[in-house]
Image (cartoon, rainbow, N blue to C red; front, side, top):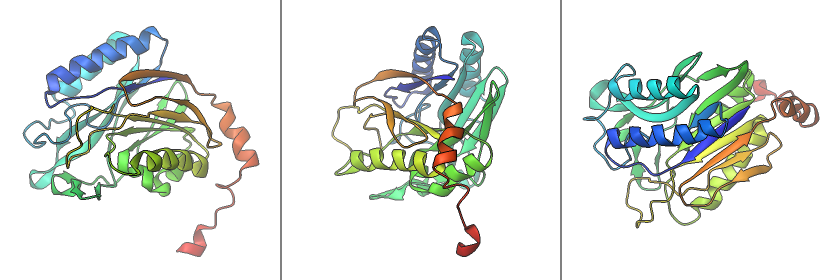
Length: 263
């Protein structure tokens, strides 16, 4: 399966960001990508008041993404914000395109490193997998990468890859953590891990997470197969679905689990 990771920088204007989604999707489609993955907060960057711009999944922004997916024949995964109870929003991944219509609300909220995502965002409570041309893919968002259980749940649901969308907070040691965590989640779930971050905006980091770039595709054996730098760039990669079964025969971490010990 050929996928594309769109490492771009979004701003506070959803309409402008939708035009970026269209531009980058057309580039990915021209390169033969079947799935195009955009970062967390593709609808609007963090640091923007989220509640006033949040839209339901049948709103104009999501419909705009659907139109782009139909026009290009691709499946698009993109981060947006949908209304939630109590004046908060859900940090939502929309997955849409021919034969696919699903969403995932971020389960693990970024209440860390001096930032409290839960002040404005309500946590999700369910995992999501999608099927594209008979290939099952899990969905995850940013801070989720610190929680192995989600990625193993994708594997248990039949996924051979997880698509991770992020707006990774900058700071001392954060790049090394990103690199380590993405590789670890691929290895301990024995899945392909396609992780797309917002590009580094080049400004001095503020309290809200923006992005550091360094999107990457990691194989089910934990090895990095493709990686970008900090700047905006499109990464196109082919995932060998059959490799997952071969790795799981050798590295039997899923089969050797003993969950009853930890209950």
